[in-house]
Length: 382
Ligand SMILES: Cc1cc2nc3c(=O)[nH]c(=O)nc-3n(C[C@H](O)[C@H](O)[C@H](O)COP(=O)(O)OP(=O)(O)OC[C@H]3O[C@@H](n4cnc5c(N)ncnc54)[C@H](O)[C@@H]3O)c2cc1C
Image 1 (cartoon, helix red, strand yellow):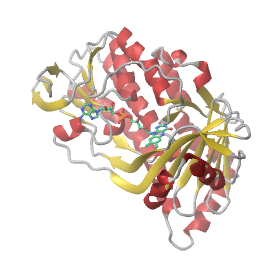
Image 2 (cartoon, protein in one colour):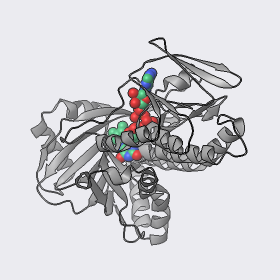
Image 3 (tube, protein in one colour):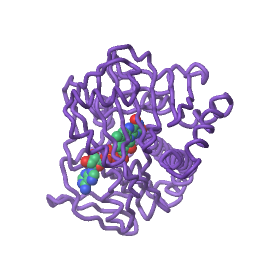
Image 4 (cartoon, protein in one colour):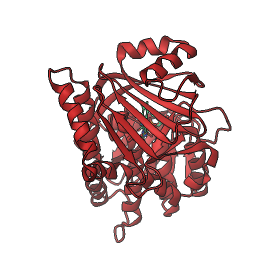
C-alpha cells in the first residue's frame, strides 16, 4: 500500500493500516517527524468525539498533552439578524461537542504511532509521475526512486497531484471567501463555549475555546475584507475581532500572527478508480463553517482501514470490490456534510430580498425544536 500525502488523514490511515499488518509506505514532499515547539500553532481543529475515539484506537488521542486540549461544552450560533441557536454537550449525552486541538499536537501524537506500526516513510520526496499496470500503481519520485503498490491512496490535499496524475480534472469551486485564522488571549473566561456569527456581509466568524483563557478564530471573510484583516497589525486585528464578536469575552490580545486560507467546495463523481482511492481533502472540499474537513478525512481513513482489515477472503488490498465498498460507505456521510455546509454558506451568503429574514426565522425555529437540534448535531459528533 502506498499513501501519497502525510497530512492528518494520511498519517491516521498509515497508522491504522500498519497496525492491521499491511505493508505500508507513506510519502510526502515535506519531512515527516515530531516538532518540538511550545508556541501556539495557528492551525487549530475541532475534533469530533467520534474521531477522538478513532484516534484513541490508534493510541494517538491518549498521547496528546492534556494542557493542549480544550472541550467545546456549548456552542452558540447567531444569525445576521440576531436569531440565536444553542447546542449543549449535556443535552446530547456527550462530555464535549468537540475537542479543540492544534495541528502540530495531532501530528506529534500520530507520527510515533505511524513509526511503531512499521510504516516505511519516504520523505521529503517530490512526486514525479504515476503509472498503472493491471495489478499495481507505481509512483516515481523526482529523485529517481519509485514505489510500487497494489493500492495507491491519494491523501495529498484539495489540489491533489495524485488525482490529477490519474487523469481526473477537478477544480474546487471558490467560495470567494478567505479564512483568516489566529489565536487570542481573552480578558474573560470562555467557559468552554464556541461562538459563531453569520455576518450581514455573508462572512462567518467562529471563536473556538482553547486551553486557558485563549481562543482561536476562523473568520471566513469575503476576499476584500480578508485582505484588509491580513494587512492589520496584531493590535488592530485584535480590536477588529473583539468588535466583530461584540466583545463577548472582553478585550482580546493577538498571540499568533494571522494566517489565510482560500476556501473552496470540491465534489467528485467518484473517489476510487483502478488501484486508486482518495481520502481527505483530495476526495472532498467543504466550507470550514462546521469544522468538519479533517473530521471527514479521519472518517475516510477509519473506513478504508476497516474495509481493508476485514477484506478476507480477498487477498488483494487493491481489489475493485474493496474500493467500491469503501466508496459506498463514505458516500452518504460525505454528501450529507457537504450539503449542510454548502447549503448554509450559500443561504447566509445570499443577498436576495427576504432571505435574511427567512434564514433568521429558520435559526430561531430550530432553536425551539430540541429534537431537530439534536438530529442536526448528532452526525457531526460521530
Ligand atoms: C481555516 C481552516 C480551518 C479549518 N478548521 C477545521 C476544523 O476545525 N476541523 C476540521 O475537521 N477541519 C478543519 N479544516 C479543514 C482541514 O484543514 C482539512 O480538511 C485537512 O487539513 C485536510 O487534510 P489532508 O491531509 O487531506 O490535506 P492536507 O492537510 O493539505 O495534506 C496534504 C499532504 O500532502 C502533501 N502533498 C501535497 N501535494 C504533494 C506533492 N505534489 N508531492 C508530495 N507531497 C504532497 C502535503 O505536503 C501534505 O502533507 C479547516 C480548514 C481551513 C482552511
